[in-house]
Amino acid sequence: MKLFLTVTILALAVTGSALADAAAGKAVYTANCEKCHGADGAGKAVIAKMLNVTMKPLASAEVKALSDATMTKDITTGVGKMKPVKLTDAQVKDVIAYVRSLK
Image (cartoon, rainbow, N blue to C red; front, side):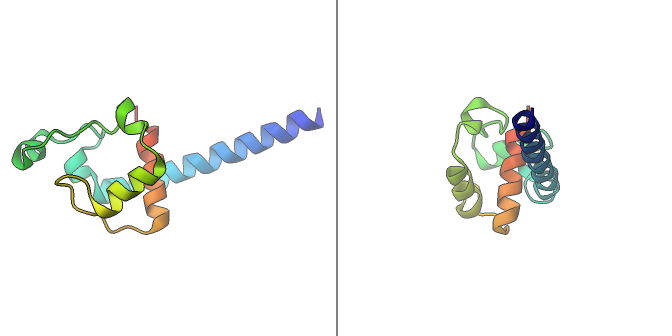
């Protein structure tokens, strides 16, 4: 019984911190990413057309399959025509947690 309680408490603690990171990430995403990627992460058609690119939906299995390291590199150094975004390490982790929560 003690083991079950310990595991349950640890699971709740991990889940709670993951939710807090995703919530913080949403605020950072809204301020820095939403203007191009849209509120739902699907990408804004007008931006894609202007840059002549195809934006992968951030909620797609393809994007979610990327490692945290790859996502970090894409955010901090840019990818394709996307320019680097200047965020703290904690903000990058929070944005990744938020992107992973998108459905």
